[in-house]
Length: 247
Ligand SMILES: Nc1ncnc2c1ncn2[C@@H]1O[C@H](COP(=O)(O)OP(=O)(O)OP(=O)(O)O)[C@@H](O)[C@H]1O
Ligand SMILES: [Mg+2]
Image 1 (cartoon, rainbow, N blue to C red):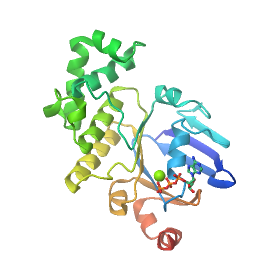
Image 2: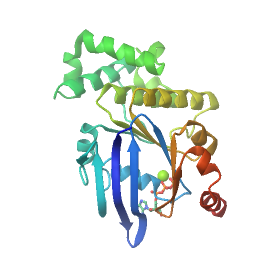
Image 3: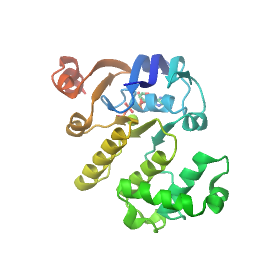
C-alpha cells in the first residue's frame, strides 16, 4: 500500500499548550485509518493541519511524495485532500445531481461553479447519475440539496469528493446526529470509498464502530501518539485502556 500522507514531527502550539506534539503518521491508500483519543487530544487540530486550515509550527507533511507543508486549504483540496465538515458545504439551491455534476466539471476544467454548470451539459449530468447511484442517492437526484436529511448530505459530500481527484477523504465525527440505520449506511459508503483505492481518515468516538470498520487505529492523548495498530491490537493495549478510563 502506498502512503498518501507521510507526516513527520508535526507540532501545533496554542499559547503554550502543545495541542499536537512531534506526531508521525503514515496514511496508506485503500485503507480506513481511524484517529481516536479523549476530548482535547488534538484530533481535529491534526485534520486542520492536513487540510491546510491550520499551519503547523513544525514538522513536514508529504502528500503522495510531494512536500505540501503549509499549503493553503484550496491548494490541499486541489492536490486531492477532501475533508467533510461538521456543517456540510453544498450548493443548496441546486439539485443533488447538479451538485455532483459541478464537482465533475470543476475537476476537468478551470471554469468555476455556476459558470461550470452552464457548460456542464448532459455528459456530466449522466456521469453524476452514476456517482449518485454509487452512494445511494439516485432517488433524490432531482431534489434541491437543501431538502436532504443530514445523513444524505454526508453522502452527497462524499459523491462530490469521488467526482474529483481525491486521494484521501477525511471525516471528522461524521455520525453525530445520525440514527443507527444512517450510521450503517455511512459505514458501508466509507467501505466503498476504501474499495475504490482512496485513503479514508476517520475521527470517531464510537469505539464499536471504529473497531469494526478500521484497518488501522491511531490513538492520540494530549497531542502525542500513544498507540497504533490493528483494531485487535488496540482493543487490548494497556495505554489505550488507561487513556480512556482516565478521561
Ligand atoms: N484555535 C485554538 N486556539 C486555542 N486552543 C485550541 C484551538 N483549537 C484547539 N485548541 C486546543 O487544542 C487542544 C486540542 O483540540 P482539538 O480540537 O484538536 O481536540 P480533539 O481531539 O478534536 O477533541 P474533541 O474530541 O473534543 O473534538 C485542546 O486543548 C483545545 O482546547
Ligand atoms: Mg475534534
